Length: 406
Image (cartoon, rainbow, N blue to C red; front, top):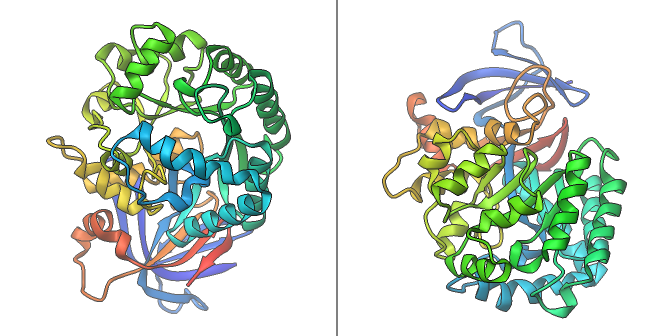
């Protein structure tokens, strides 16, 4: 059993974060056993870490493993960024040695910023996806991993026939679903432009029949939307996915920036999940996410790094950006922290396993070094959400296993 004397920051709900100064947290066999105030003379043999904060492991709801090296690679808009940067980079993952190196670097980088759970796109190659699963298993990462699916409107080296893409994705799902408690497969059509309606419909039908997870992108960029409407002849982008059956309670839709009220209502009707990617939206000048309108419809909103259009894997940076990218509507630090911890866990249906520091949950934790200048307790959650990305991560733990230490 490990027993640590430290300071805990624990999300309770969107409006309340519990701060426990000088607490003891213990875990054994991957499970949190106890959390309580330090008792002199009783709590013996503790590791002393009073200059640190213990947080639940951070959760990244949307990221691209195969794009990791592209962070900060400038291009003024989405489609040209894909063509000039992303597609050539993803093609490199045809080489298994390259795919293994970038996957290893990616997971180590996640751990180094305290991220314990992530929802991942790999390059559009079955072998690259299998390599990512293998490295996730060896390193101890908790992740949903999916091969990017494309059968049209992309360079020839990145696309395959509809039947090939569908069959390989099904094979990956059948191989990795329930194989390991820490990893699962997620069907990952890139977006409507690069997926034929036939492919989208086949994926949707199989995923619905198996209650499997799906992730894709929706309404990120105005030019993208115009291309989708011309390609499919629909009135809205959302209609393409609805007609194909892709909208389900297990569907994560990234961006969702330029939605009409009717489209928002449709997503709420199907209980779809939203991956808000504020840094990416800012970087590519895609637009402002209508947090207030989507939240008012009781849609579950998560936050993702969207690396590499997002410039860092550090979810505390993205907590700041979630508020900064709202020109008028203000989001409290408590809610920002909730989004990258318990809120994202709830979105994934993992709230009984992870997302907060509670006895009986799995020990997914990260320890951050407090800055030398004192922070009043009442300001701690604000400091954490607005400049906590500067706090060094000292240790990251997944299911009780240390996956990173400084």
